Image 1 (cartoon, rainbow, N blue to C red):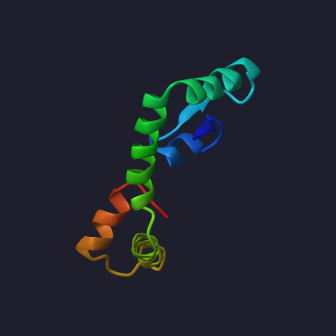
Image 2: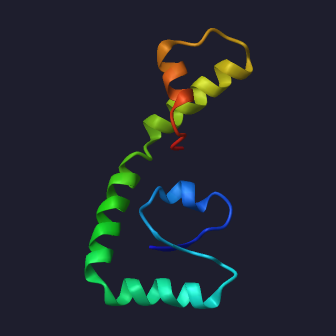
Image 3: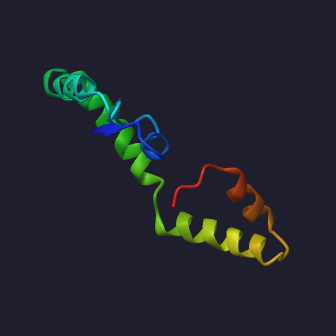
Length: 91
């Protein structure tokens, strides 16, 4: 994946993409050329992407939102809730 550094995209990709400045056409071209010509880079990013994608599950999303709702409603948090809220959200 070649991805812009805009907004939250770098956090979402978590190191599993070749990032580029969206305001710099030469940076976009360089990123695409690197992915096109460097099979080792493609393989590395693909492996990182598969690992990253594995964390995006319905179970993790549900766990995270449950903890957020409990927190917003001032309900008691479980140890799992506190651990979930302390971790990077993967929803």
